[in-house]
Image (tube, rainbow, N blue to C red; front, top):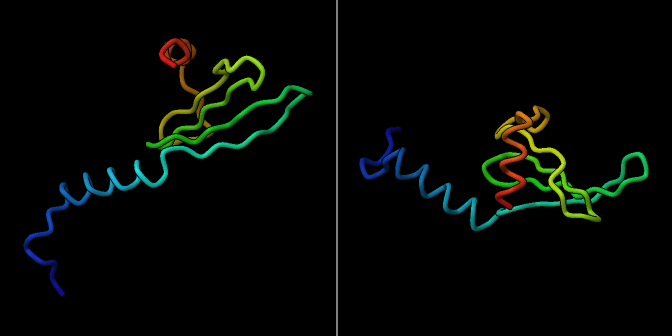
Length: 83
């Protein structure tokens, strides 16, 4: 069965992006490690940010699409300044 001719993959991807942003802009949870309370947040397009719950300081951020791979320290400082 072939796809209808009006379906454009690029257009469908853009629409999916809009829907995902509207439906799932962020998901967050709280946890503690070594007696310190943190907030972890998953942001579209697929990166995880970890914040100190007391100060709100961005402590760690992953590469998009790889939640366990830390971004470079210089990029982390820029992201903290932008928030």
